[in-house]
Image 1 (cartoon, rainbow, N blue to C red):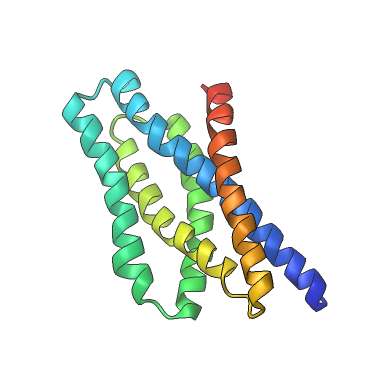
Image 2 (cartoon, rainbow, N blue to C red):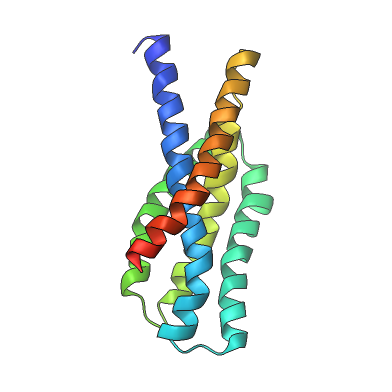
Length: 157
């Protein structure tokens, strides 16, 4: 693969991963309380607790683990977390009041490795102009995903 193809491949991975993860993360954080409350009849306290559990998993991975990893290990954690999220996210569809707890913890935990590493990969280009363009594309993709995510979510619901 030449450098232009490698660059285009990297950009496509950053854009598609950003869109998919941010849109699904938004769906996850907004639909989870509704699922817990209305499908599993959780109390208000448990709805808050399960939402907190997902955010806590994200915080632990992002701030306490991911930040301390070397770049090689961080890359592997990113790849493994991406596959783990791909497996875990659809399982919410078949979850129960018991199974939802580990799913939330796992999803939150792996999201803590995915989002920070996408932005890091977007900023690794040595050429300043190219790096700024990639970061602009990353930001644009975040915005588009926050519009498209709820549209997809409403269709699913």
